Length: 205
Length: 223
Length: 204
Image (tube, rainbow over all chains, first blue to last red; front, top):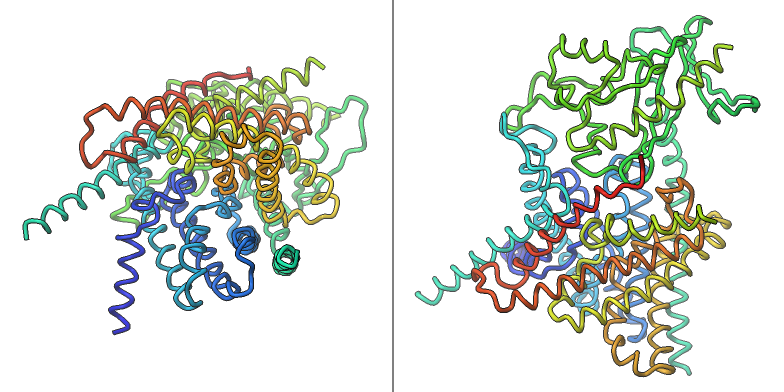
């Protein structure tokens, strides 16, 4: 029973409601830091941390904040976790801080987090909100990994800093700004194509 | 009015709690962060002097204001058994339309470059950011065995060059990590480095500030 | 005087073309794709962003200098900035509604969207860093100019994009690429074009 629930939640976060590829939220960090798999994973985990914890806190305090100042309160909670995370990263993984730079404080305005706070955590209990935060964060991380694999391979012929194909001359544009747009267009196109095909199959059956 | 007051109180309480939480986190991490920064600098300093040389101490020097202002605000001298091995200078160079590239250069008393380490940069990922790249020789499907050089190739190619003469940039030889030994020796003979493909500006940040400043420093220190 | 003037010109050109917020720095993408379907709404959003960015740059510069740095609480920067921006947007909305209803009618609906536009927080944070042209911290005038010029850069990209997307409506696009994917490809091509500006160099 419980395991079915977990599979269902995971499917929701990674596939049916994937924050980047289906809902198109949180585009700035996903395009900016997906230049290498390491950065993509780091950003994904950082956002998941903030998403899960802020979801829990918001779900706990939702009862006693006046409706009109709801959004500012949510933003304060999110900003708190982002600041704490920023300090932790600086203290324990300074290399990641150097790589992600300005995009760590900008997790505050990542629309996925405020979006989940508003759409889910402000209506559900802490446990369910935690689960929602985790699966949504996982969906975000998985999409970042897909994007960064494509870009790191095509743009520098590497994966996780290791060479891939001997003699392949990488296309540098793929790790520059245009490559980010092309990569996400391609992945979204494939996702749409699969969904269209699934619909057709369903109609046939 | 009551509703207004309620809103303000709620927001104030939440902001206060948030401030306290961040303050506590800051207290816990402040020491660790400054430790990290210090150790990064210390290992960068160590790396600019040759591994073999038995260096006892690296001493920071804050020069007494000399009239010409030729010396940097702070530099380091490396001593081995009371004999001077060389100096290390913290330099910065204008790279590609972002923050300056900061790096440390170690030179001996004749101005020969002993080593170089990049402290911080904000160059384009995949182009200028390769100043720190360690040339990988390992493949993703066989990630064991020879790990290639441990040093970033870009800074390694400066070792042995003279900082007193202008350092040239060779754009035709390809990148240094792909060259064989005779070709490398030829470049060294010409006092030249290879550019990072597509990032001549980042490369120039190093050669320019070395050629501009170090000759003056060495001359001043040898007095 | 001439020195500070060239500094300002450098900052503006860099913010509008070379380091364009949307196409080179990847900031403010959500409104960029969300509001670029029609030219008229793109212009409205662009104007609102320029306005808020300029004012936010001015205010956050003071707060950073006078409060955060002097009191040694720079670690509270993120949370203070986002609160300032959120209240600033709210305040602007009220002021506009009261005094210039006409302007409010055209910009009003875009204002709430701006709080979560990472470009605003982004420029505020960039202004606390080092100005790459002078190698020193941003002065008040410089950060104001940086804010305004970044807003102009955002608007330029947004309006160009909206023009292109209006034309795309008429094109026959493969079904799976319809909608957002083709917009991403268009943005990618624009980013490629803007890469050309990176050759514009003020340095020897």
